Length: 281
Image (cartoon, rainbow, N blue to C red; front, side, top):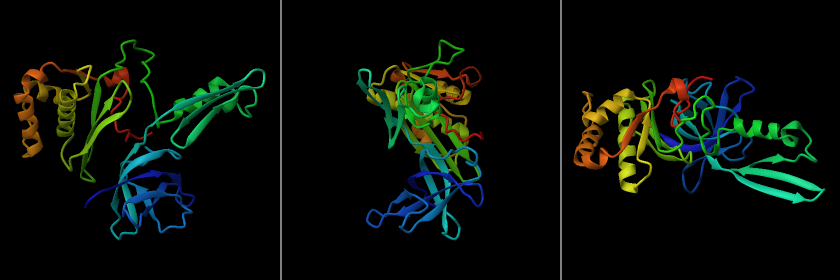
């Protein structure tokens, strides 16, 4: 069954306590669009797959992939990744009268007003930073790990997510310098190793085609590193994309060997930035 894409904000159901969202199909484009529960347009409910329960939070816009429920009464969300926004900072200062800093991203604004703020979250730096640091939807320079001065802050991080229950394997690449998602691909029901490997190969291709610098890729998959090093997989799956990847690695060997593939140590550095965030909270 084909998946559809949309953007949704979730809220906790008063009846079930589960996180739910709603979508409506646009009459002209026929695409699904996230709407409020009280929307006057024809809408259908969206519920989280078992794999995603406990991984999403309310009032955050998510890029989602949906599949129809069996009786077409609504949709099951099989993938949910926070939409990322660049923050804009505006300052308003009038001597001895006004001092305001507004941080805007998406359709939300966080206010810092030490003179007239009505709560600690708007009147104190600590309060404002507390709100900003909790947001999952702001693109920012990745902060160095407090315990490690060598936290990677440049290159491409790749990762894979796999759900055998829903027949879904995806991988993506994140630019460590900007926090932006460079690519995201769904390859159907494959394996984690295949997804991790193709994620690294896709990053290699991106670096070569775009003259990306630095020529460094991070992955937390030792198997993917070994397959790229050998320019050959150990998978017995008859999957054309694997053969194409091997051909690319061999025919572009000179360029490939100039790219450094580094192992991301999750225990020391935390989850790799390309992680899909589908782990239970």
